[in-house]
Figure 1 (cartoon, rainbow, N blue to C red):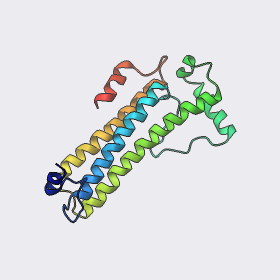
Figure 2: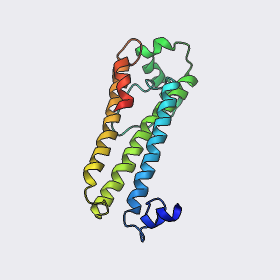
Figure 3: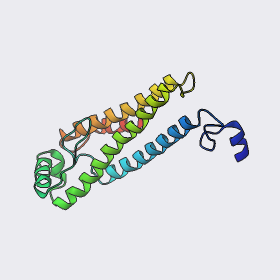
Length: 176
């Protein structure tokens, strides 16, 4: 079976000398693997109820609190949102734990986007994307971007509610 894949040029098993699209296939498979990892980290973020621990959002991200004073300031900001009402027994160390999961989830999302876009630009500039595949690449970018927007929307709406994210909006997330 492996020889059949090699003869047909299965991108993950062949070299660019055997299949000119092998680097593109490896990039897409690697990106797909990162998406699977993102889904797992998102699941842990949801299960640990970490999703609303970061009360600010910037498109490019920012460094997490570093000093004790920065952590205390961020924790005090978190206490101003309705999510705190469900977790009043939380300590600063508990907050650091859930903040870490949410921070990791958001940063991983940005990394996945970069790992998709940068090679796409590179491969496009070199004419390495197979003919007719550019609309598919644009579709993948749109799906990933839409998932990011839905995540932002869910968190934004959750921070303004009494008991977390609106259930209808939460159900939308996995299907976008």
